[in-house]
Length: 254
Length: 354
Image (cartoon, rainbow over all chains, first blue to last red; front, side, top):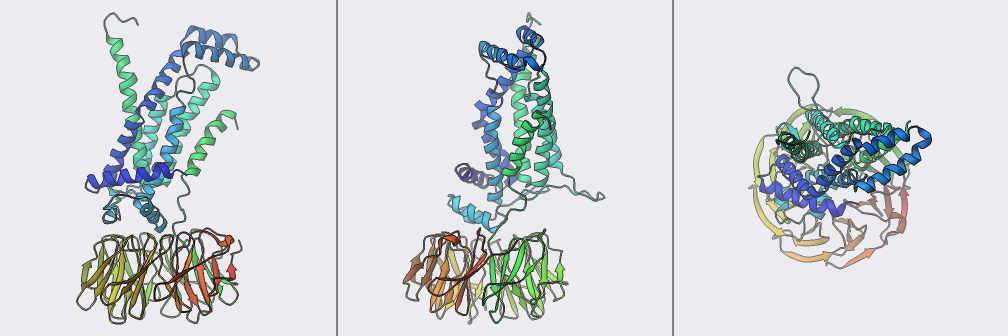
């Protein structure tokens, strides 16, 4: 279904792999940076929307509206009024969601790209052969899946002498970075339902991402960690730093 | 459950489902026969099926219930008439050929067994994706192992005293079959997943993903000749008299002079060929990924045999000749094995009961 994304992804990933001295881990990191650059406008839009939604929570009109239409019987009216205010302030309430939806096909494609490029089974290698157009692809096969202590085609575990089980370091890193990313991106909501939704998102999303990283190939987990870190960095430069700078500017109203 | 929980969990579950399961089917049915061609074995996913070739009835299946077991490589005969099964579950099995019951299992392999095993004398050689070839006695005890630079997907070949192992590290290794000592190695110029074929004069023929077929003089450990192909060579070669016939992933079938590698003729099919051509009823039969079956005469003339619509789908691997029947493993169909006569008519099909 996503062949139109997976095929070019695989070609670019293998091209980078070749360029970086056949290091698949570094290739995934560089490839993730490229994806973040290409999707930068969407991610920037998401951060802006989240910021606008957050500022809306402290708007007197919004607060008054929450007070006036309290209770389940006024839910419909509240929604109508909220929509009016969104329009008035030029806010798209789905602006923070749409980029997330865009991330989903990218995520599926990335999973299949990693699996196809590492080709641990005959069908995966056949699919790889069908889509690859690099002239020296046959010489590169099989790609070197080793990166640090990991086999990027297998679920990652760090085995430490004396500990009877492998530690899923990447899955833990994915959980931590997903939590921070989710916490940063989720606007604080003053209405109960919105706040609950936000809390659930902050709880479920990191757990799910960690679970996926625990059971699937380490290459995907590496993509998650890199993508999350880049997202946090982007958020820092777009929101935290400018806010701190404006707060420290002499004469700025607080 | 609250509506908000459902709203969040639903897309998350979708996310999990879209990534597939961790144990995706990774290959196609591996078909082989017993000595008198009365029973066909089909290794396909969670079971190995023993099917009577007279009527397509199931004789037994291993294991009785689906579980962690997965296998795709054609089952091979062991030293004592037992069956050697290469497991995707990192386990190598020996089964009783009559009942399908497990005799022993070798659990020390570090990854999938993708290629078939080979038995020579009382030793069994099992190639693994953990880069190793394991030599076991016929009770499953490890005798020695030989490590290559990359996974080994192809079945080794042997003349009884020397073992030839083609690895994905581009190398062909000649080993002493008893001790595992390396005699020589040779760079084939590309990754090899196809089974090497040992000719009666000691020449070894092997295809590579570097779009070539190589003939190796095994007495000197040197390349005798190489011939370029249009596509990656995945399938094994077939030797008919002095003609070496081999297919590639571009769908071409090459007939080469076995002595020189000179192309005698080249036929074209409409899809990738991943198996060997099979000599059956005076023709070479080959299947391809487009789901087509072709019969080639020795002078290169071909005819395409149409399969019924209900058996449409990609065809991988090697057709197997069983007397008057040609057996094909089916991929992604309810039926996993069909038997055809020389006109291409389906004589029986085998659909496992769940």
